[in-house]
View: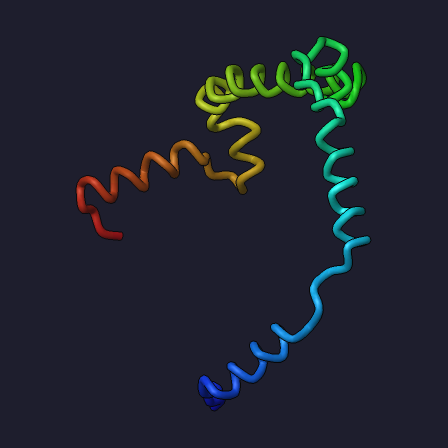
Length: 120
């Protein structure tokens, strides 16, 4: 556990710091000259509105945008077509994939057992 220094120890450090000489006149002159140079510099211009080329470049170019568009179209097609295909073919290829049991029928049976209270 550390103990806090008492005020007499801190006063000794503050007195030593007060006895040190301040910055030289040369340093002050250089700092003020640098400040004047910075104040005289023109302010940066605000960013302009994004252009079509800037947006295309930010996304990675036309090749990336084409891939993104194809992926979006495929996701939309799968999202629209797949639910109806699963319901229509619940005893077809999906049942074979899941080991002979229909996923949709098993899903419905699970809810039936839960709702009615049928025990196995």
